[in-house]
Amino acid sequence: MPYDKGLFELGDACYAYLQPDGSWGWSNAGLVMGDGVSLLVDTLFDLKLTAEMLTAMQPVTRVSPIGTLVNTHANGDHCYGNELVEGAEIIASAATAHEMNEVPPAMLAALNKADGEVGELFRHFFGAFEFDGINVSMPTRTFEGRLEVDVAGRMVELIEVGPAHTRGDTIVYVPDARTVYTGDILFIGGTPIVWAGPLGNWVAACDLMLGMDVDTVVPGHGPITDKAGIVAVRDYLAFVDAEATARHAAGVDAWEAARQIAAEIGAKEDFRGWSEFGRISVNVDTAYRSLDPAYVTPNIVEQFRRMAELEGFLPA
Image: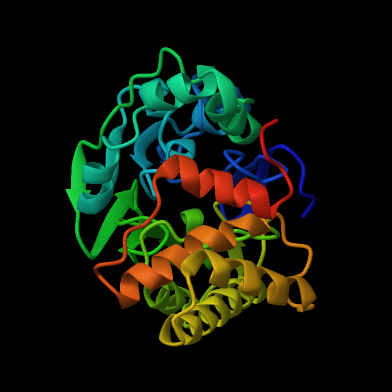
């Protein structure tokens, strides 16, 4: 299937909405059609992008309006457009619902408008998006563990696999279509970022999906894949976890460990060429925090500064 922007039919009345190039903020969404009603998997990073997506979905939603919206996790590129899905029940894990209040759109709007190095840094990552005027609609129903949702006679299973990428990640499994929407448990062609961890939980989430009856895998970012894409992400996370653990045991500083592991990744054929490779700095911080509860993660500005430095960008 081509990796182009727009709505793509996957078969069995399942759809994916893709946003190349899949880098920061350019997320995917999904649509599962039942008998006269549909379930939407995630909204997008701002209102303009979400409105464009909902317009593209109208050939389906005119027949089967969206009755349920599932937010796979709390990052804004998967929930900031919720308010445009009027009248839908919004479902998320309890951990996701709690976390959705922590980074309001107004905070990102202010960072994008900031003067000096901070503003330049955040515009480098998020300058393409418009965060003003967004009022995030919160979940109206939460769950823990697993929840089966009846989409007009069609069963869709929500499976909580966090904390991993965030504290409350959920995958959306459509058994009769052998399809799974992974949220940011999968980045395809881009480097996963482990905000919450531990990394072992994310590896376990990949193992869970590998054990499922699945042919089609819709990642949170990047092109549609299959189980090979799951394996690639799992192997990256397992590699980083092992390398960070060894350096922590040897007393290596987390930032130095991130630089060392970044160099090793650059030499490995399996992961070479993945975009956003600077995310290794956050991933190592998370690994160190999991190994030592007393470890203090750098503040968010410093985290983004380190990622930018590894990728060769720093504000003037």
